[in-house]
Structure formats: C-alpha cells, structure tokens
Length: 281
Image (cartoon, rainbow, N blue to C red; front, side):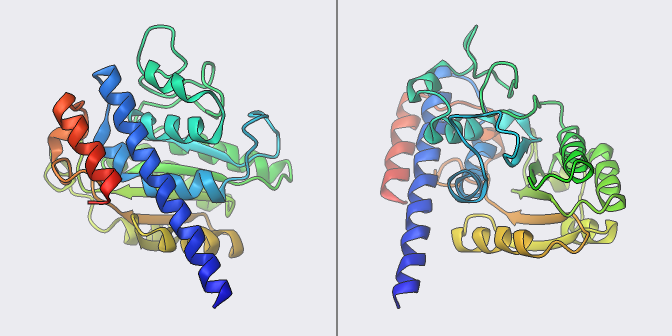
C-alpha cells in the first residue's frame, strides 16, 4: 500500500507539472501574440515526464557531457520546451515573457547558441530525427551512457528524411535512441489524413525495425511505463513510442481544432484557457 501511495504521489506531482507547463505555454504565446499552442499543449504530459523525471540533466551545468540529449524535431512547438527549461531552472521564469521578441534567447524555433538547455537548433521539419540519430551514434562509438530522446510530429512524419533516419538508427542498432511521436492527427492546415495519409505509424516504425510501444500520450502512468521499458530493454533496436494525443489538450475550445495550430489566444480566450487548466476541466 505504501508503495502504491508513493507511485500515486509521483503521478500527481507530474500531472501538476504538466498543468504548469500548459499555463506557461499559453502565457508566453499570449504575451508574444504569436506562437503554436496546439502542438505545444498536446506534448505537455510527455514533456513533463521527460523533464521532471526521466532525463538525466543538470540545469546548473547545461553542457554536462554525460547528460541525456533531447531533440525537439517539431521545433515550432518550442513553447513547451522553453516552459520545461524555465521550470527546471535553466533560466529565470520571467524570461518566458520574451518569446519571439528581438534579441531574446527564446526565438520562434529553438536556438542552441542562445538558449541554455537546447541541444540542437531545430525547425526545418523532418531534420531533427537525423540529428538525434547522429547524437546516439556518437554515444555508441564513444562508449558513453547517455541516451537521446527525440519528439517528432505525426505531420512531420510525412517527410522522407524521417524514414531515412529510422533506417540508419536500425542499421547501427541505436537502442539508446527513443523516438516519441506526438500523434495528434492534425497539422498546419488540415488533418494528417487529408493532407497526406500516414497509415498506421506504429506498424511502419516496427516494419523498419524499431521496438514500438503505443500509449495514451496524456496518461502519466502510461508515459512513465513506456520510458521505463525503453530504459530497461535495449535489445539492439531503437525505441519508438507512438503517443496518441489531442491537439490543444487541456483547453476545450482548442482541442481537435486545426486553427489552433499557430494562433495565439486573445485576452478573453487566454483567461478562459487558464481557468480551465487550473480547474482541470
């Protein structure tokens, strides 16, 4: 019973962190009057588990050589990454209000030369996974223990370079690479199914040679279990976690709505959204 209570406390803490991420995401996008709320919100639960439990990092030493690496391949949802970095202490919280402002470390896509905690600059869709493969391959060849996590969008998975990267990861048996697909079903201007049907992403990654898990990307216990499995079961295969998510998760009027891919909330919408998140609606 004590063990179960401890687990429940951990889950509750991570759920609270995910709420804080969502509020911070909306605050920075509202302040900037620009940004991508939909995909940032859909990834918040995954990122909460990553940054507040799974990743071995040292915010006070961002370039620690043994740190786990994280690549945000869908770089336009950087508000969720910046929120994690701020809440983990990489930089002061008030910096989040400088999103997309001239001279800010928090640009519209992650910039490794400006922002501490960003391991690689990303934004050109389809390319981030290739850089993650390179990092994982370097770790293998240098006999280092760090792992590499890469968050990929499902719309982004229409890019051929994603699959070239997967082939390379399989060839070199990069079982220190964990690919997470934010499978929210929407992209910039329509559903993924309408723009370019993806089929069953889990089946595709498995056919290419990955070890695949399918989870509810908003279930903290399932996310934790998936990361735990990837940690404990190497087996010479890269890991892929296909996380079924809801774009705009946590804000009722944003959920499943394509228009919120890259639209900032106005004052009234922002106030309503924060109330919903705080109330757990």
